Length: 74
Image 1 (cartoon, one colour):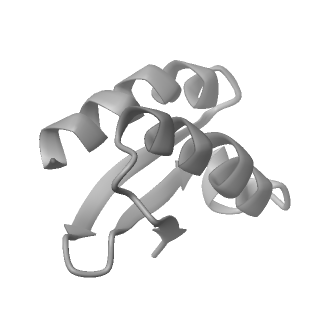
Image 2: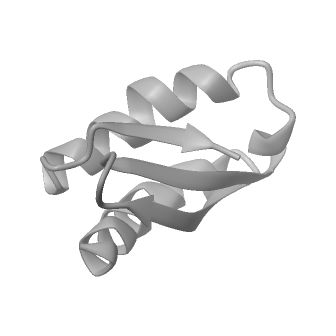
């Protein structure tokens, strides 16, 4: 499961890097279905980071790994 999540993040990463940001996988809890990521670079303090997280990263990860319930930034 963790590898599928990381593969999904690799597909998203170029879009974030184009704007000076990035995202790093932190953990996945199989019991809750929650993925934790760390926003980096410009994404770490961007006012739009929460929208990017929920409407971009979370949506794309759920497409690849439907078992995911939520993606949160830590």
